[in-house]
Amino acid sequence: MSDLSIAPHSLSIPGRALRGVSAAMHVARSVFVPKVPALSGEDPLAVWCRELLFRLGVRMEISGADIPSGPFLLISNHVSWMDILVIRALVPARFIAKEEIALWPLVGSSAQAAGTFFIARTRLSSFRNIFEQVRKTLEREECVAVFPEGTTTCGERLLPFRSGLFEAAIRTGRPVLPFCLQYESHDRRPLRSIAYTGGESFVRSFWRTLGEPRITVRIRVFSPLLPEGRSRRDLSREAWEILRSALNLPS
Image (tube, rainbow, N blue to C red):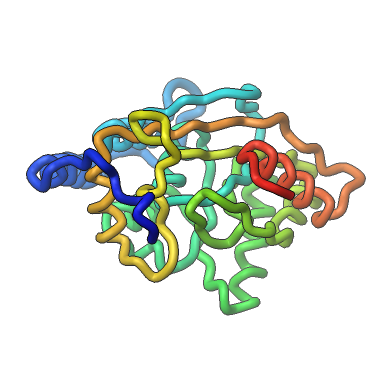
């Protein structure tokens, strides 16, 4: 990772430790949080995610279209393990994640409790099983969130989207909702330290993130894309172009 990822004014080691203990204590209380949204009123897991983000020094700023209430396939660029917390703080969605995440400290247990679908990317049978679960979930009027790049980046590029799961939106007639996530430091610089890429351990990434005095995540919501009359490749390409433009990346 380049020197751009090093915060010029990082928190001290005691400061990081205190923030980490606060986050760990909050995660320990997650066993008492209902993971399924109530039919009315506040979503307890969303409240829990917002509190955890607050303890990590994260502020969310949302712009763009309103988030619809109906079921949809949410797609987003993928920068960090924090993306799941940010999206779940806003949308009562189930996620698709690589199976290794289930073993991560802090995030893994919470992801499992929230009903995340874990996929083994090297097994075709795993994808087929996940596809059926996503289709049935959308049919049950629930939202599903996916990261169609299939992996994280440092935020300076957008990998080609894997189009397979867009077929679930087409078969169920559910719209695709594009989300764009961008992380910035306290002085509004693009924040590279939040990126979680390559073979880095979760613990190292988490410790580096604890050093950021303040993190701002800008969430831009786009109008839903309707699947009628489109192939999964057309739908994924349009979603990719929307996010590429939002990130100001070359075509």
